[in-house]
Length: 437
Ligand SMILES: [Zn+2]
Picture 1 (cartoon, protein in one colour):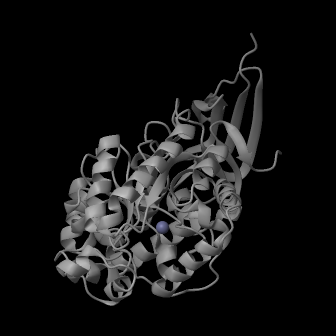
Picture 2 (spheres, rainbow, N blue to C red; picture 1 turned 90 degrees about the vertical axis):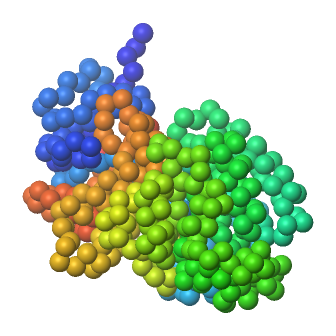
């Protein structure tokens, strides 16, 4: 029997993330998995090993994009800032006008762009369906969240829940063979779903043990609506069928407390937490709640800047021990699916908020962890990927360093590179991006 071919990748630096950086490092891959990692001279290779060296580069785990919408890729890139409440109706209008063959091509383009940018793992919102197949085709790891949206009218709720359950049934089947990708549930927001719908969706997620994500506290209007059932958001919804928070005059608390009351953070474990996207406008009680519940915030700083929705309180999240990851959101609200650019934006935001308390080295290391192991853990995959560890999936990104002689690799990666520096992406042991050298 012939031995399985092995692949040895070497680079100036290997960053396992959960272990110290290795100068002149090497990663030996056999099949889909990492067989060995260490200094190049210490790795023994089988006779049938193919070797590739990347000069002036660092190798790190494949990146985790914790919040995106692959299906919207070809609606972008968004060229300039747009106000959120003008952007969203325009997006809905464009979605209704798109032909059905738009979505598969768009989602596939998005998955390809992610891989080219060094990402191998994703928390992806699937609104129309093809996002799941695109993630599977590119062998991405993570969770495809089937989205629930527009469920506000009580009389229609049973029918809509039945439709959603049927969609989940269709979605779960093709993913069943993959250990890398699972299906989850993505309630859209607290304003496109009634509180009754949110409760039913929380129950559904618990009953089916589905991981869950929701856009939360993205705008000040959402917060006002949650508290009082009033404001410009309420006025807009009133003309489109209403919402039970308008009738009740709000729930008197912010979106995170509302989501918790509706049971969206129930039935979860530290290995399968809920993920909230954005988390821009949370009060202290809500930040403490997210920390206590182990809920992960997917920070999307560039999308927030593009739609002018505000800045997430990264420093407060860090101080309070909230779990964090990074997401690009979609190209309908960002200029690229580049997690290095997202990291640079998060770093700059954190630096500004922390002021004199900012520790550049610690911040860069933490952001790299958010992009890798903490992102993987948020998606329930911390044992399978997110670090360069023997036995894990060989999901890797090799990135050209702007200053190879500078030993602060984490800082370079968090502030000095963009996706075009990615020289190679390995997805489950296969080189999926990067010219053969
Ligand atoms: Zn989103």
